[in-house]
Amino acid sequence: MKAFSNYNYVPLLNVKRSDFIDLRTNYDIFIPFGEDNLLPTQLNQLSREVPVHRAILNSKASYIIGRGLSTDNKVIQHLISAPNNTFEDLNAIFRYIVLDYLNIGNAYIEIITNPAKSFTYLYHIDSSKCRLSAVANDVLIHPSWAEFKGKNDENLTALPLFPHFRKGPDGLLHSVYHIKDYEPEFYYYGLCSYFAGLRSSSFPD
View 1 (spheres, helix red, strand yellow):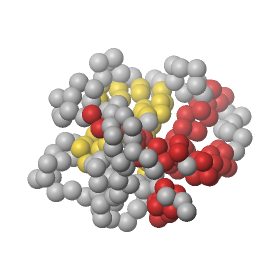
View 2: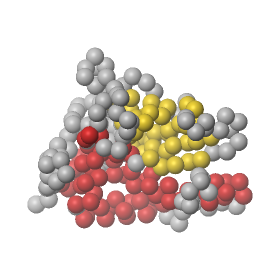
View 3: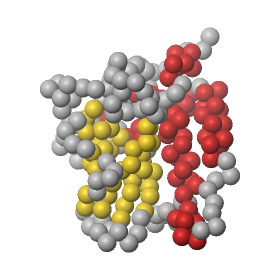
């Protein structure tokens, strides 16, 4: 892979033996994902620059999604048609989740409700923007981890992991459901199933 032009940075594409960390280290805010904490961004770049790899990911996603979600139950059909207050249906959100899961090994869904729990909104969160907190049961969301400025970074958002909810500035309750691919010795993050062939995908003969 070529260097990332915007950072003049060459991707490491490395993971440590485990994602378990000693909380006495410098990682006292978030649990890093990858040797330089940028593995998800690197995997996104890989899927954009290697055509065969991208085609395989898209084919797998299409196979999993099939014709989409459907039901004869009117209540469930309403959730499929209008899972939130945008114009996207649940099939679109499902596709984003599947692509994140296949590409990065992790996917995140934000769940929003009110104190009375009279409705539920579901939103996809870009997996590459998420890290897990080292000090709380939270998901930390940042638009660019390469430019993260520390715990007081104004662009950092913290949301609790499901089943916990927290009231936001909008007065609604927020939570994040984390889907991850199992990987031995990894306690916090999943790892994409193609990782064993990553080098051949990155540097084909």
